[in-house]
Length: 79
Image (cartoon, rainbow, N blue to C red; front, side, top):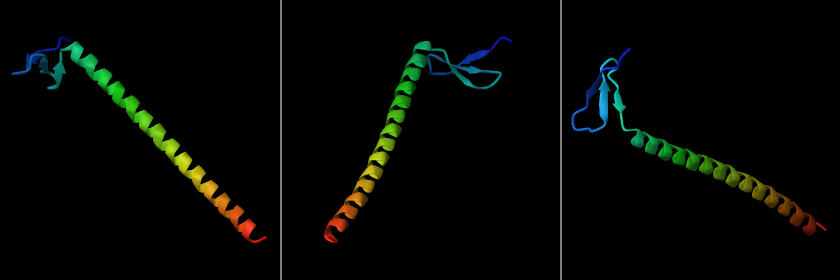
């Protein structure tokens, strides 16, 4: 089945697929740049999620240390 593309006015590399009415970007360099930006953003998002997890782990560890320290101090005071 041959695609029938219609040039989009005022856009050098954009075409409308007449069968689906979707817009197609014919600039492969632009697509490659998009993929690179997308991958960078996904990597940043993953790093942020990992950092949030680490912060929560540290927060929990600090809370546990605080509780243990309180127990030690109470035991020292009760001697």
